[in-house]
Length: 86
Image (cartoon, rainbow, N blue to C red; front, side, top):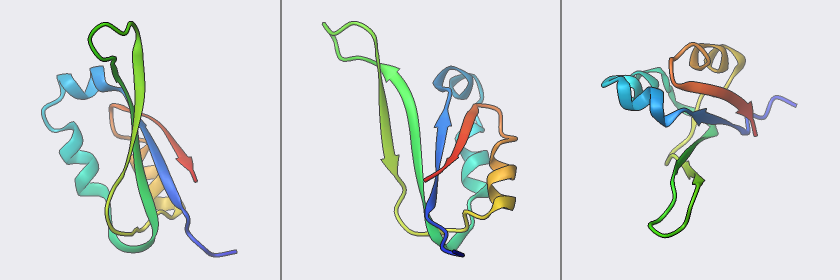
């Protein structure tokens, strides 16, 4: 019951593009050494010739603290649209 699986951070690329420190702020809040994984999801422009946007998802290497306190903290960062437990 106490197993920390992970968090999926859904990011807004438009907001992060306007903020030079957006990704750095997220990075500074991640606490390595926990038991959970962190996945980053974001919509990006499609490939040339293919209309629309596509969502990409990346898993960060290592394990992190993904407890309720961390989850709440990450929701306060501008550009983080949603934090979902996985």
